Image: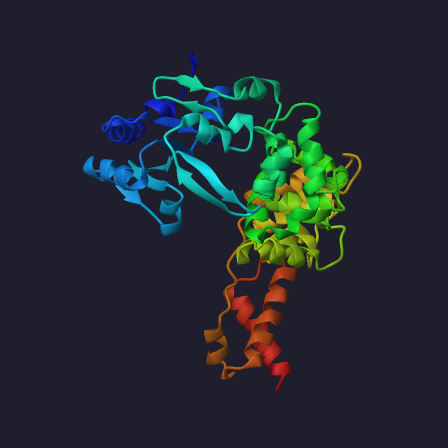
Length: 413
């Protein structure tokens, strides 16, 4: 144990209020999970998890007795978790647990007051540490040394831990992408290879959550390459045929854009069959918005090119929207094997940032004023006028647009 760790969130008023409430009954309360890793690495943390030997009913009574708002869901309480809301911050408080029975997807747990027993059920040594409010680190399995060395290692026998929850295969590669240095742990990698066939038993939602976090790493490519060599990536994403494309995208993002998991996923699967975006979106249970975005990026109706002039760029920004246009610029840029067009690509991104697309000035009311009844003809005419307006680089005003509309109506009568 070392009393050397401090992070700003540990002494924030809301954190102190929650800890004070939980310790009022005499319990030994500690921070657990990712926030402990972040504190040791000097990183900011927004997800604060707290462990306690007190059972959920006692936790609720202590928090509510201190005037702290709580949230619960039946499944969460059954697994010992209560959410505290203090000054706009969320704290997940979980009773110490031990596994009673596991089947590779779900665990039946029992409560305990033994911190080591609770730590022993966690997946990796770097996730099994706990931290008291005064900065004391409790590390039963060498997690602190592993974190410093960039060594992602299972607590106990890797094959046994994976058999308890098959998702730990994906979590191993995700944590290696975020915290690993050098070659992955050999025993863990062999266990992941041997159990790769169990991945299809996992729900799309759980797979999506892990893979999106992996793709959000600073550079996910090395971990994805190891997954591919281990036969794991084929189980979770057989459409992944664009590793070189993704590697180029990561390098370009470091220059001009923030890492984006959906954009990176698009680069990874764009070389697969045309319906790959929809296929992956359905299998991973992406939201409707995320699925539409992935499909738009993998099968774009229009794609930017480095020789587009300003008018053509504005046309694409208008039709695609600035976010989609920026995504497609960096995705197309990443298809190149050199940077000979970097100036042109950067200029397009600057245009997307600086140019505000105008609002189409003609409406259905203008149609009705000309005696055009509601129906398909209204949409056809609106599209025709809009196409003309776009071709004129958005310069015609409302009066000019109505003249164009009158001319089109005249030709149809």
